[in-house]
Length: 125
Length: 326
Image 1 (cartoon, one colour):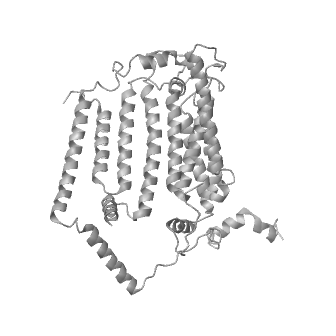
Image 2 (cartoon, rainbow over the protein chains, first blue to last red):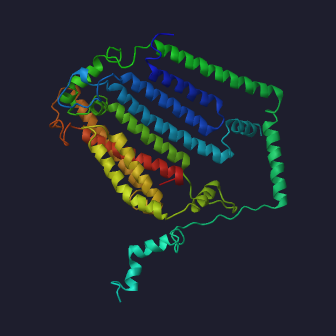
Image 3 (cartoon, one colour):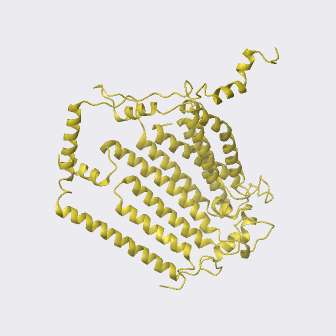
């Protein structure tokens, strides 16, 4: 372990959240809970990016008072990337939820194991 | 008579209704909110038996495999393996984090010449006071165009997946879509409290959203956040007053034309800007004075276009998940 684990506590929290979200994806059988796990992973990535761009003692990148030196503002690029990520995750969540609704209408369950068993049975007959 | 008002006039005032409500003479819900009671679920003994038999049969067929010893062992192994895998993943990520440069220092590799260029020349080159806004709508405008298209394509896909067809089955039994439509009949309508709150809140929310969009180049905000706020206001209006009211101004056709118009305007305007910029031609779009509302060239109209797309998308998602259409 390096020396910066407790200094980078925000990034450490993001790493733990990412692992929790991935565990949700693997362990939960309910499709809605799987989608929640994926959203937790998304949030972990946003937290990591926001921590990347932050610099102590500097303000948000909005030019105030004509000051235009790098010394005054935080890094604006991670903020823009988080914006992209949020939009894509909203679209992906909506898409996954609508697919879940279709599966529920067909099989009347949200349990992925039951759904795959039913599909296997349908293929046999 | 000492009263200033007659009985007839007094009956029309707010105080009359208020005191009636206070004394419990009138329930504001009775006769106002349309609520249709669902029929209580009854089943005969034979149906109960059939249900239990069916359930047992299904579980025997489905879990016949799962009940066996090997399957149980495999399931336990899968759970243990996935927990171990997640722990290893978290450990590896934490290990990497512990070797990253400390957060908050300026000499990290992320803070290279690219953000320096954006901060030092952004105001002169794009005219936007908000550097993030200038970055995503000027330097990286094609990225934002792609994002808007991602939203549009997601709406189209959700519409394909959740669309309810109007055709009826011949053999008399109701389809799943009709059953869901029947389910929506039992939702409470004309809720007085919700309608009053929406009456006050919806204009404020929508005006705030417009403010956030129009201030995208001057301060925190922009098309995406403002569009989401306007979408939330529209959803609140829809919840309070129902689909019949919103269909007067927002239908599938409106969505189609607003999305098409905004996206093609974005595409054409930004193509022009990139074309003139790459070939060193004179650009006819004025930059304006930084800090004024009409400044920073194309950023304000592009923000409006993005905001329209996002607001329509949010509303469309909600309407499709609730009703399967607009």
